[in-house]
Image (cartoon, rainbow, N blue to C red; front, top):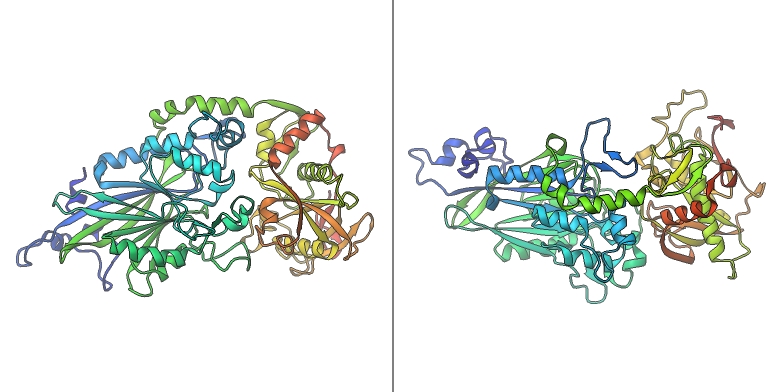
Length: 604
């Protein structure tokens, strides 16, 4: 136990580094905290620590299943709950287990071959099915609560409910409500009681909020079953209730970034990344563990507009690369505990070794998945890579489009839409994926398509596809015809991620990056002729895009002709297995190119 923190003489109080919580005053000095002579009877003090993770995405170990090797990056980061467990144990030893809490802000059961394996290959929902490795790890580490993330819904509600049943702590989602009754479908909050040396317990409430975008991104699973109101609206409803129930401290675990932005245009009346807005608009919150955005926020202080009190926000980096630490210091004032200061910082999991208890616990599951992803399913004539796929038409992305078009063509062959041409979209998800020449394994194909998306067929017109391509082309930074081209600065205009840039196969077109956004698509043709705006096409799209992810025009409202629940990744593996040999002659074509005033930017 840290006696300094327990007596309120630790770093925050002694240095004045704590966030001021009343009238602009700083945290009490050491002299004031101990009740120096002439200052009256000393006040009771108590300090405790809340630790937080987010966006774990199935990372238990510091292992890259796609490379079949220990995870490494240029920054020297390490990943995995096994490292987080070591950090958590050290903090509990320093502060006393009873003076700490551990929470998570969502996106737990999707993201690696490990999580895919126990959702689809050896599913936890099967009779006598296994316990999910993320549940085993989080139970063993001793989490107190976790918020729902949007990716919790990727495998359907049955998988999520089974995972929930395997946890020894609550899965929170105040704004995940029953579609008919609008009552909470998951526990909205949990209240933990901390025992203090003074005989005066501290009640800490954790309110869980998830992302309204679930209604778009996983519509196939949740439509008619669940609704997802805005974070601000639901926080305004629940925080006063928690205070009336005697909560001395209110913490929000929010699967929502702090930027105030949304990726879905005007499809929903809510904000996607609403954490800072919740802090500003809803009184009574002391701190927010932020998730969803996959960025680092060590400490962001937002002033509540009604009370003038600061709210401390922190977001640890995803994949268990960081652990957030909130240090709270309380004082007993007028018969109740009052938050005097809050500070936050991030701890790096690369500073500690794996916890051998977690390594031992999940060694067998890890070995199963390693064996699975290393299965050979075919061979490739040449190496295929995504290195330049974001600015050149790369055969490896053509492979995705070929598979999708083939699957949709087969699915519609006996329908009234069988005579319509099938077009397909795909995005360059990764900048480092590669299918090597020679043997091709499941992990090679999984690294190409890292998301658990499924396939949908939509009915689109030529005019709608033209608008779709113009929107996609906004991804490129406008570049004058005579300006030098730096490929590292050519893309991601407006911070648009790579997964929101689409190829469309079956058409040919130029993207003139010298032109302003909205006027870039040139020479758009189908079958060698100018595209007929009135023509109808079947459009093969992933479910994220089909449901409005990325806010591409027309596609979300287009008529749906067909959909399935099999992952696109699986369809790619099936296609490669059936072919036996990956030959670019079977799928590659140059459908688009970047130009400036009609001159190609790159040689194809």
